[in-house]
Image (cartoon, rainbow, N blue to C red; front, side):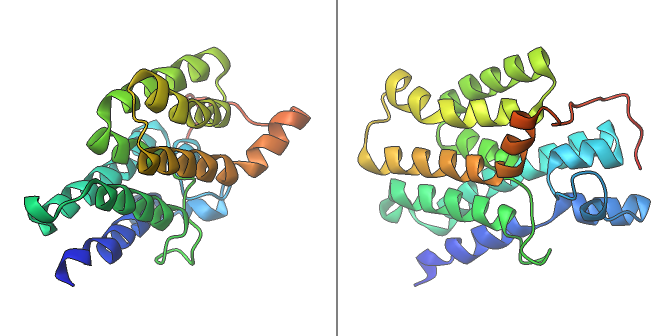
Length: 205
């Protein structure tokens, strides 16, 4: 049973609310009460400033990467099957979105998903990251960039890097759908034309 310890540990790692803890520790601010009231990196940029926002982005990505590496450590080589890595990645992202340390209200899963893919499929991660950056710097909409990257992910993995195994296809589609789901409010604002753009010149609240 010890080999399955990675699942609860991955969820706990994903649940670590970095933006909430850093905001409270350094500024006495709960990011969930400011800006978009989300505990993700984008709101951290807006509320806490670009330095702290970048730190949150890195730490949230590190959570996903760490969950995969921890799974490798817990499972000996002969017992480590690919689906376990995918499970660990999905559970970690779910932990980030539904954080047990933040009343099940976490981030939107983008940065943590990036960390997961850097650990299990780095080439797909880098291609999708380029897509994100192109859309973001063209529009300044983080949400639009995230949605575009998420939608492109299954196609990039399947058609470019030949990740055609059923378990990989299901995982990629699940992560993509999850990210789109967490951006439901952003999609509505984009349609209505009132989605805020990212302005790095803004000071923290």
